Length: 452
Image 1 (cartoon, rainbow, N blue to C red):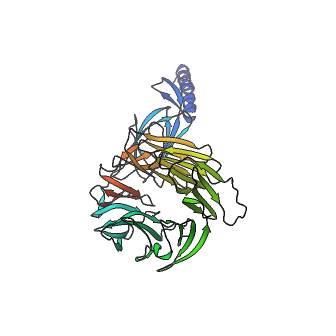
Image 2 (image 1 turned 45 degrees about the vertical axis):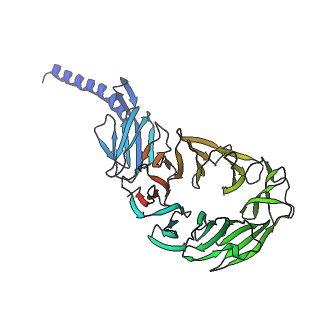
Image 3 (image 1 turned 135 degrees about the vertical axis):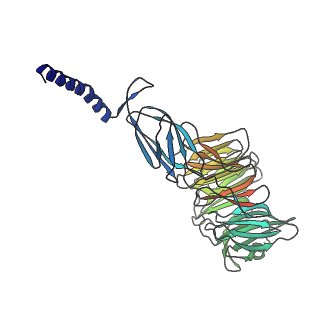
C-alpha cells in the first residue's frame, strides 16, 4: 500500500469518526431523530403498571410489544396511542404524550375481567341490605327475612314476615355484628335488633320502653353493641345482650322542646329542634355544664334529617328542597351543599367523597378547605349509584341499570368500561375489590368477578 492509499484510509476513518462520534454522544444523551418533526429531539420514557400483571402493551408506530410492569425507554417526543390487552379482560386504551427527557407514568391501571355473572340467590323481593364491609346481606325471599354470608355462602333465617308487614329499612352496627330492622304493619312500627350469628333471637325494642311513641332508633357510632333511642324527648342508651336490652337514660331534653332527629358521636349530641316559627341544628355535650348556646345553625322551615357523620362532618338533608348540606362539627360553617343527591360513598384512604345525582358524579376532596370538587361524568339523566373501587383511581357506577367503571385519570379521556347489561337494579362491591354483587331486574342475586 503506497503513501497515498494510507493517507486516504486515515482520512476516511477520521471522517467517519467525526460523523459517528457526535451521533453516538447524542444517542447516549437520549436524543433521537423525529421523522414527524424532521429534527433531533431528546427521548423520553414510559412506565406502565397494571393489575393483574403480565398484560401486553402496544404503542402506536411500534412493532414491538411489552409485558407489564414495563419501562419503555428511547421514545421520541410525541403522542402515543397505548393499548393494553390480556386474555379474558377488557382492553385499556389511552393516548399519552411523551415529553423530552421526562418519564410519563401510567400506573395503577386496573384491567377488569370479562367474566359473566353467576346467579347465587333467586326470587328476592324488595331491597337488599349489605353490611358496611359488604360481606353479609339481608334480603326477603318468600315472605321470609334471611341473612346471606357472601364469603361462606351460608344462609340463615331471621323471621317470617306477617301478612301486612313491610320492611321499611335495615341498618348495621359499626362493626357489622348486629342489624336493626324497621318494620311497618299499617300504622304500627316495630324496631327489631339481632346478632348476625344468631339472627332468630330477635329483640323488639318497643317492648322495653313505656309510653313509646314513634321512637327514633339508631346504632351507636362508637360501640358495636349499643343502641340509641329517642322517645318523647328522652334519649336512651341500650346495651344489647343475648336476648334482651339493658336500658339507661343517656340524656333528657327539656319537655318544652320538639326534637325531630338526632345524631350522637362520642360525647357530642347533634339534634334538630323545632319551635313554633323556627328550626335549629344544635349541639350539646352532656358532660359539659357550660354548653355554648351559640353552637347552632338556624334552618329554614323545611323537613330535615341528620343522615350521616363522616370525617368530623355532619350530613344534613333538606327533603323539601332536596338539598344535602355538609356542615363542620362546630356548627359554624356550611362547608358544601349538593342538590338532588341520591347516593354517596366516602373513601377513607384518599379522604374523598363521591356524590351521585341523576346527571352528575362529583368527587369532593376533604383534604383541604375550600373543597376541591371534580365533576367526573355529566349526562342528561340516569345516574343511580356510585362506589369507590378499592383503588381510589377508579369508581364503579350505575347508569340506566348498567354497571360501568370509570378511571379518574383525565389525561386524554376518562377510560369507561361497561360491565353488565341493562338489568341491574342494585349492586355493591366487596371489600377486596375482586367481585361485584348484583341484584337483577328479575329478582336474582348474582356475583360478577372483577379480577380473576
